[in-house]
Length: 211
Image (tube, rainbow, N blue to C red; front, side, top):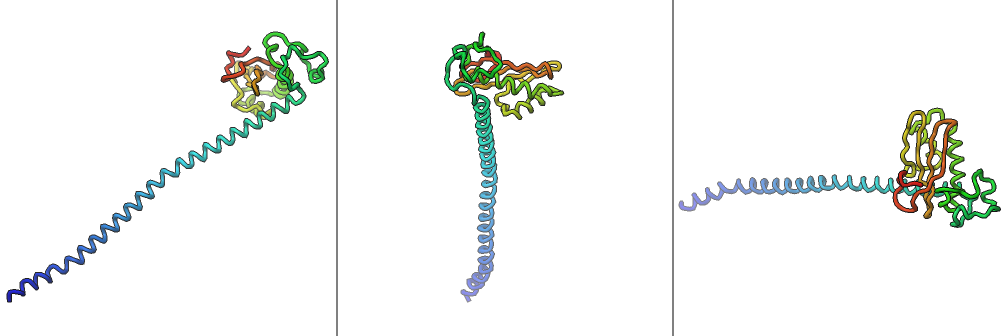
């Protein structure tokens, strides 16, 4: 008779064990689900930096391509110019590379500081830009930029593009390989003027430092 309470007590505890096992199983499942959620949410933000890096690489590639195309254009324009670094004022009078150019043989003033190649190239750049802007009906900064871009002058080398009345003024930084060439232009239809200027060999281009 003394064992009956113990037996009854044993049967009374037995239903709790399956419930306890189910509860533990549920907790484990929730824990695993929570871990999965954390991993998923952690992986989400990681995708954004990857996209940003991809965008930066694309921009860098585009910029590199533009620079290469710009340098190729400069070399193409100056293909008939002297390749040496003689000062422009020291050019020989019988230099065949300058015979066809409508420019003085011995530059004076700031242009005398340009080397032979830059001085020769300046006339060619002046001519092609002036011709392209000559018949521009509405020389606004936007239309002038479009014309300059079409000629191969990239935005990075176009400076102080501003409109004053019916005239849009601009500067072009054409320095390459230690050169000092820059151009100052004013687009105003038949009154368009493009002239050479001289910039420091190094450092960022600033119009107020030109000569």
